[in-house]
Image 1 (cartoon, helix red, strand yellow):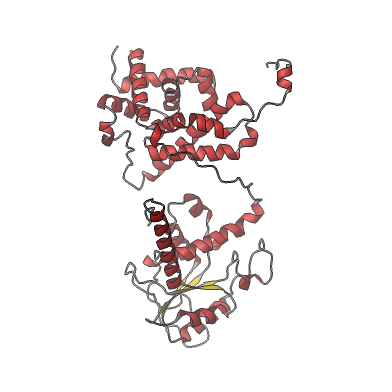
Image 2 (cartoon, each protein chain N blue to C red; image 1 turned 90 degrees about the vertical axis):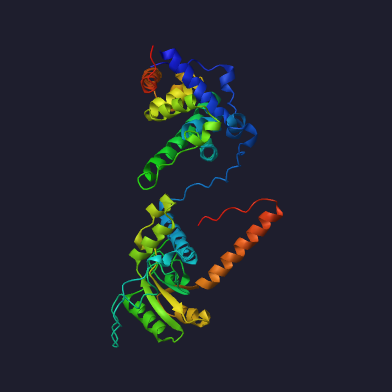
Length: 243
Length: 176
């Protein structure tokens, strides 16, 4: 009995193996130069930077807004203390409308010089205070070209981040809510220039960076077009999109 | 405990460093085929071997014994296959089951029905039995070589293979 099983197994394995055409096997690529692991102390700021950069590109990908709209909040009271959550939702979930500008606030992992007060990169940054966040909101609300503002807290940011990077298990497992910045997501009136809004936001204390998403999208589209053109020149078919 | 034999003149000369790239170049096709049998599709198999290559390269300083180098490289490939299978098992909870081409009906043109039946039965065996059977009946390795690759004892290899063959026979309803 065993001889027969062994013979069948041998034949099946050989046949499976021989489906590999030696001429068609993708050749090995030379490995990347090996970089020794950094000591753990330095890891957090690096990861936070990656997370922040990833958060920016996630927005550029247009995915973030599918569910970031909060339930409609009452108009903030006219007096000095503005209640969280801020603002009105940009759009109903899934309606496809996206923000034009994102104002990232300082958090402990922020790398922007505006948040660091001259500290070394391995020291935590100074997070934006509640008062600073309120001030940012008040300044943004006063601008006539802004049609909607949504506040995204760290939990929502993490939720969106996880959805965007669900294929990168390591990244989503290592990233915590506190690694991601809080942000205001802003929709502009059609045709409005985002530049003055960005400059006004970045001038405020507690703001790490303001980003023009339309511009990021244009840059991304141009990069992709250049890549495709290069691939065509080299006679390759352009790589399929990952989204 | 066994005492090491006294060093000969040959041993006194520092051994040549093992060139992992050379081993991979020489055995690339075989390693890809091994990975293919374990994971079931060529693209994943190629990825596994590429990643194993990069990992072994990173671990180069630890690899000095030329006799063990091939076993080490095969272990790395098997480890990569295990990770792939684990990841797939995990993602199965949310997605429809992934049918690698080697096991699915698509490969009917490449592999006959009878062979696919054997491969499917092999795939349902416990991980250790499956690996031991592939190393024995595909690579034709000895008990000792399999023990090296899998990091288990030679007697465990023997009993694992015996149990694996018996289980495979039962699954295939092979009569004496």
